Image (cartoon, rainbow, N blue to C red; front, top):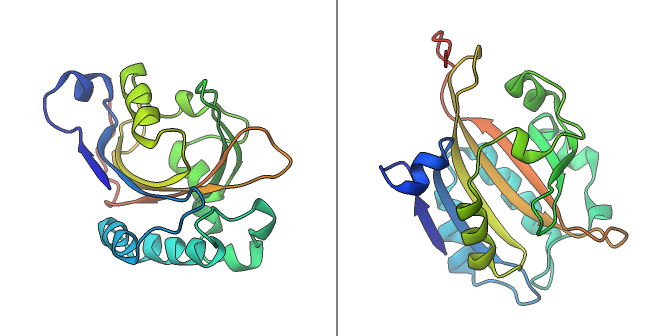
Length: 192
């Protein structure tokens, strides 16, 4: 597992203003990860809800491969569906939100369905390139802590758990992302 901390004064920290921490977890490329790797990644997650989402996802990931999109059950996701987004991505960084829960739309203050991910969070080309090289194009778990300072919005720190999903009918990989606030929003409104 690779852990990157980008909240110090480095060139990347300055260009990736909203990304505080990033953890690249086990990959699911046909070989099941070691239990110790899953436990280590699970312990990084900052809330019990994120751990429950990961545990649910792991029940669907069999044989070291990500679950099929057809296995995602709204009934099983009901306890956390309002904080889930399904994102379609490709290596040209044209990731788009295909579905987004109500809590996410409240967090970002707008409808997210159809939006480009790069329009929602800041990420430098250098970091994108490094991430693609680090995961070598293989589907893996990721967890990031982001600082969502949006002009005119309350200040929030958000945890994002990203889990790969396979869609047999689509050419682009899918990511199921769980978002949750890690702090109570302050009354302070961020002004640029």
